Image (cartoon, rainbow, N blue to C red; front, side):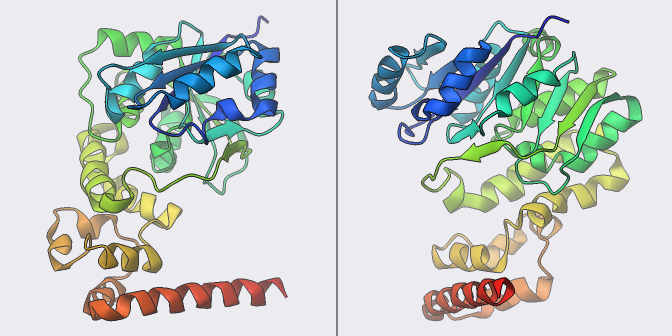
Length: 317
């Protein structure tokens, strides 16, 4: 069987030091396999463009464009998905790359499925071959928390053609979830799960949403999930809304203390429409964090981190 063509499409904003172009092993593997690397650059400076010109001297598989004016996060993700003309497109966050041998392994399992979900943060390390029908829908319901990751999904040409022709409503910060859920709602979709964790991330600055986490992972997350309640199943919605924080441990004690310290978490936060629906921490702990005097929060954070390091040290003994 002829191997399908694959492009890795990277929407980027001001991460020239972290982007996959910097990693020779990854770039060489992509070039050897004929995997094209598309860079959709929203940066206000020309650092990524200069890097691309340098990298092109060694690898001929890099395609670059500068977005002027910038597209913004959501449209850059969507346009990165639709840009390449290949059988599959892997939209990958701008700090990600694959581990050695990862690209070849992924190419080997692309056999015509609409989506291939690729593990980064999950604890299910199985390789699940393409499935369809109710099995595929259950895979979506179980993994939609994970697919918030820009880099967690590879899309077949059929999906991208549907996006081009459909009047797709996209929700802020999660347009890729609208693609997955929207397509699966009206098609007998086929999905695989690549559980081997091959995605690596370069050290990076705080994500763009870090100082407004409730806007993204309370309001926007709930908005996109509730918009697709038909496929996600009404009696699963409550558990799905909690699934992101409970699986990623995003809204853990330390992060909630940090959000309190920077002023993003206060009593009014708890009045957000879906605040309690997405929290995995017990209500009593969240309230206790709010009751800590503001001047004590830095000391509480230090104590929490110290206790965490001690616990890790003891477990390693």
